[in-house]
Length: 417
Ligand code: NIG
Ligand code: FE
Image (tube, rainbow, N blue to C red; front, side, top):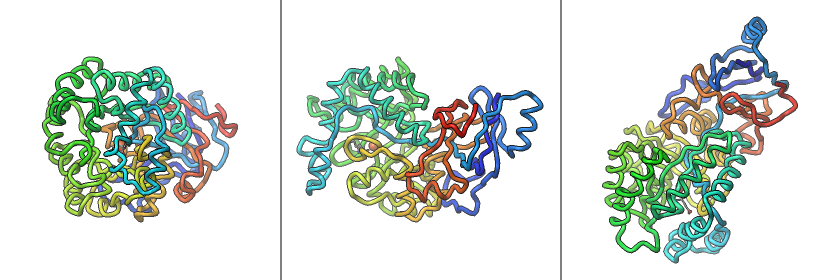
C-alpha cells in the first residue's frame, strides 16, 4: 500500500456524464489531495492531510510530491496505428503540393506503401517500433493505447502484426489494446473481390485470432477507396457473432460509416470529418462513442469532426490521435485534443473527458479513465497548480511524472519514494 501526494489539484473526472456537453463549472477539483494505491488499484482518493494521518498510523509508504502539481487520470488514446514500418514523408509532400489523399491512394501510394514496408519488417522489429512509440506516448501521459493492425492485409501478415503488438505490450508499462483492422483496404495483391477478401478474413483470420487470443476488437475502413457499408455489414455481423467488439473508420471523406456503426451497435465510430447533421443526430441517439481524430485533420489539412455539434446533440465524444504514418504522423494526443478544443469551442472538461473516461468507454474499458476507488491506478502529473494551464499550453506543458498500476515511471527529483 502506498500514499501518493499531495497534488495541488487532483481531477478525479468522476460524476460527469458519459454523453453530452460538460461545463467547466461542474468539473470536480480536489485541492491538496492524494490517493492510496494497493495492488495497482486505487483504494482511496481524498484530502492529503487526512490520508497522511492514516498512512502514518498504519506505517504505509508515502511517495511525497513536492511541488505545484496537478494530477489527472492517465490519458487514453483510443485509436492508433502505431505498429508500422517506414515513413510516408513523400506522400505528405505530394499532398501539400496539391494531390489529394484519395488521389495518392488511387495512384498506388498511401496505405499500400506502408503495407509493403510493414510486410518486409519482422515481428521483432515491429514490436520494437511499437514499444518506442508507446514509450513516447507514455512520456506525454498516455497510459493506455489502442493499437490497430491493418498494414499486413493477409491472414499471415495480420497475425504477425497482432503478435508483434502482443510482444510489444510485454515490454512497455502502458496498456496496449489490440484491434484487428485487416479490413483497411483491399490488398493490391489479392486475387478476388472485396467480398472474397472479407470472406477470407471471416473464415480464416478471425477464428485464428480467437484461437491465439490476439485481440477482441475488429475495425473496418468504410470509405469509397476502401469498403462500402454493404460490403462490411456481413463481415461485422460475423465478427460480432464470434464475440468481437466493433469499431469503424467512419465518415472520413464521405458519409456512410457512422450509420453502419449505429446499425450494428459498434463501440465507436471514428473520424467523422464528413458526418452530416443526420449522422451526428443518429450517433447522439445511439450508444456509439463518437471519436474525433484531430491528428488526421492536422495531417491532411482538412476539416475537424463536428465535435461541438456532436456534444450538443447529446453524443459521447472521445478524442484520439489516429497516430499513423499516412494521415496522422504527429502522434501528440494532448496537443491535438487542445487544438480541437480551440477550433470547436469545447470546454476544458469536454476535452479532458474525451481523452480519459470517454476514451476508455470507446474501448469498453470500465476500469480506468477516472481516479476513484477500484480503478486502475494510472495517473499523470503536470507541473502546474491550475489545471487550465494543461490545455492552454496546447501540449507543451509536459508531465513531470506518471504512474501505471501505481508504479511511478518518470524519475523526477520532486517526487520521493
Ligand atoms: O485513420 N483512414 C484510414 N486509415 C488511417 C490512415 C492510414 C494510413 O494512411 O496509413 C486513418 O486515417
Ligand atoms: Fe485510423
